[in-house]
Image (tube, rainbow, N blue to C red; front, side, top):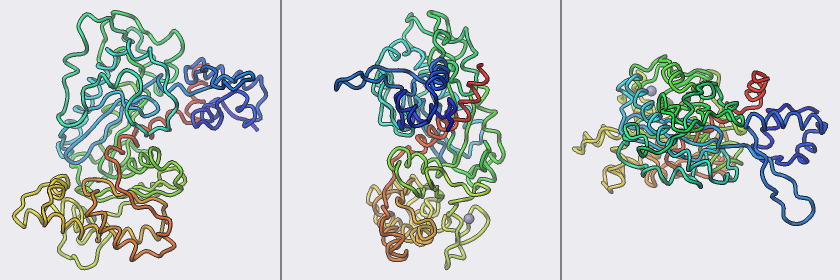
Length: 473
Ligand SMILES: [Zn+2]
């Protein structure tokens, strides 16, 4: 049996083996080979060899751990009317966060420029905090996608993260006169895809007092990758959306070439329902063999994680339940050009139009949510009815996939809508399909967690790590 350096890293990262002895046992490698491969990983800064964990007597083993602070991930979640972005470490802990109103219909250049400004201002902020941040002891490992806030210095210093957009950090990159570490004199590491090699001891370019060339390179750890969640269909392996009904101007637009060169990092893009499913799985249901997230906002879509991986189908169309036709609604016109689609009957956009017709002007799924939360009777009634209509389609999905967890996410993920879903689901689906099914209301922001997990799992996959190590040799 043989295990490459990348596979050894995977064993440590997943905590299946975290000592040399455990790695020898689980891989069957010779001690000499293991030592050589671990030296590569330690030399590249991917692994750190920690203190002695065991204090129960005998000779304690030194713990190996994935250095989840040697690089950062930039993640953004773009929704119809709103977007958020974060810088996280490699365990998904948020170091900085921005959010604000951003209309996807304004087109890719305006939206991506704004996201890039957020990224740059956050990196500038973190660069100026860098001296405080690295002094903290490393936190314990945590699965990617889980982001409950940060032990250690940086997050506490970030201003609150809900509500108004905060673009101010770029204009105010830290206290004046404070010595700043910067990688500006050494652009190599940040420009290297994957960034992992950058953490080689002594090579991180931390020169005191040098002005940063641009915020993205200001002193902080290198950016190893960028993950973007979009509210439209993305074909597997692509970094653009394909014929998105609610994203005018985005069809085929190269999101990666817009953002990648600016930050010297690879860009990965996926559909929001897929990334919500990945984020929910990694953060809250890591043991679930089959998990479905249905996102009901202005439109409707579902994401599937089966056997631990997002299931996309052959062309990325898996889970696109918003265009399943409901009988009896020939007048409901859908943005896809058809009529009677689930999204056109029960999506947030459809409910907003019906509320408007009842004299309650509402423009989007988030507007519908506000009316439901305010207890508006017409909105509550429509939400329950829409929940039952979505439940009709989910009953079929549940019979096909037989998931253990069904998470309802998006603007309409609230108790009235979910009550309608449950009512129909448990009545219509076979008992065998629902016996062990949990129907849950999703966390907010899981698309962002999913985007981070997508990047980390790609950049630190065994094959990617082996390739970067070979390039270093
Ligand atoms: Zn449709």
